[in-house]
Length: 434
Image (cartoon, rainbow, N blue to C red):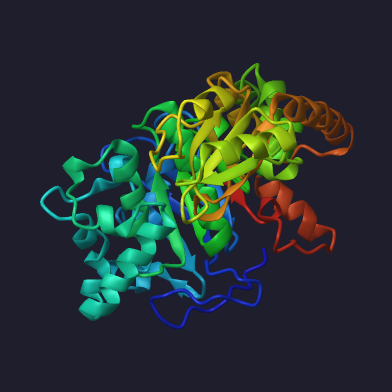
């Protein structure tokens, strides 16, 4: 197994030459045995998590996913084995110091109700001795990152926020001291489907910008496919059944257990493998608040369009007006439509279709970094992409390989004189008893 790991010099992450600020994680024969239980909750798990990637832990209830997650930051102490963060064995690090190096996000954000948003976010930097000025600047920076206006939200309390807003603040708090690793335990399980989709998109946008190492527990396989660079599928005792990319798991499930876990909708799940940023977007007529409605209508005539996208000063969409709506006003207002059909550019085609179903325009607005407007995606574009995705899936099925991750896989590679690819953790992970 390759154990060539980069070195962290302090408690904040350092961007490498590729822009990755995350740290690699190695779980080496990790076991957790609770007193009074016949079988261990985690049984000899070996798993290598690459720096800068999102790894999703999935499996049936009680299989050891959350226990595995909590052992990484020693909220739960392992009974046996090693956990290595970059070059550091975490069992040699003071628990409190370790947890300041690792961000942790749970359902509903886990915010302290008696503290303001700014105070919640600034807890760890304050513990680390940052100045008030530096903490204040970091709070505003992170609120911008999670698409919350600092002036509007920094002084609010958790009870004044929606569930989705609380979760965004929870992510901001976890990132406050710029940790290389972010652990997430069912982070979006307590919000409605529309909010969940937008939070997932936000996480993907943040990850594209920061390239942290993210380990996330979920019971939702669709979420794992959407978010994960790699998916680890567990059975009881955190035994690894398959550890691979979403594409290869869907095309080549390792065994019947994985097939059953994926479910009968595996073909439909292929829609989650194509992102909105992989298809061509349609252009739109864009206007600003304060523009004369007559001028916008004239531009619609020239472009032969029926809708105009209204953006704010930061180029974020706030309205999508029809010709009829424009004929009823003199100037475009700065009102914000909370029900805009919006998807992030890293959203899946499945998400885009869901959003279009509730859009009177039969299309959706696409946003990118910091919610800036990029273009429009319509049904025709998605249907064309679906056809290409199915062709790609058939090709992958005929040429790909099933990857059942176990000790035998690793031994087979090594016995033939081969080396494990550092970028392919599926060839450097093992679970005992497989």
